[in-house]
Length: 342
Image 1 (cartoon, helix red, strand yellow):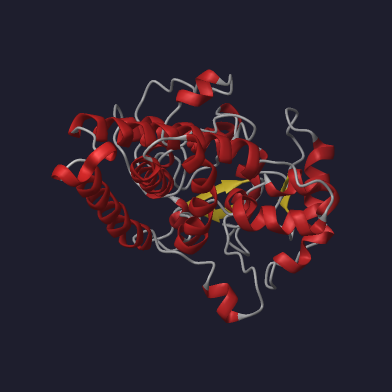
Image 2 (cartoon, one colour):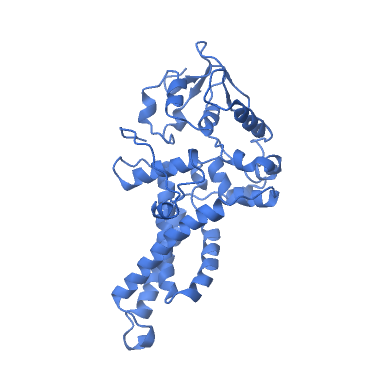
């Protein structure tokens, strides 16, 4: 084993965690002391999910093993052990069989009918690998969005819209007539729009992105495109933020009813778009950033990790926990007694 590798052993096999250190939800520092050691006991101690054992299979070093351990890893990457009393062997075997139906070297979107009857269980069993969606290179390229594209696209729109609304409703002199408002009122509309986004963020995540598509292959494919893929391959940094064009279409659709409900809807839209931008940047950062203990983003990173790997039906807030408290989906993450570092 090369010195540059980060080897651990589990169930008779060796795994190189080097590429996973930064993404490990429990931090890099918690892994450091187990380099070169078996990890079965500590994984059990900290209650790792089925996804954790599944992802471990993606990091297996072929041909390497530890004769002091028992068990094996299947060809599909799922861990099969002889001595795991706390695990449901039937569930492990079932998820293993589901995974074996798919060929990850080929476009995945056209294969989802193979797991359609049990899509919910499959999609929440995460993997640490790349995912190809389309056979067409052009279509495939459209599914990738580097994080910096989002602020590059939205900041000019937000600033431009805000300046125009301020000019038309505050800094407008005698031409304001009945549409004139004070600077304080303008700020109030912005804050209201920002706050409205937090409710929209929660609602979309819980009732749209986590809506059960049923057995319809078409609905399953749509769900996988808009959110399911994010749960199946949660560490894909090029598919973490919302692509600008679909986001623009969604914003346009949501603006129509809002314009009939609220006064000065464009000012509120400016605030809501600001909230969206903050959300998308937080979402990317809690997946790939390294916040320090005691900060807001540290708490949200741990909270969002809980949603991905433990409670898929709770902890829907990403930029805020507010609506989770209100709608009774809040999750109290475990107090570790030490700081995680990424």
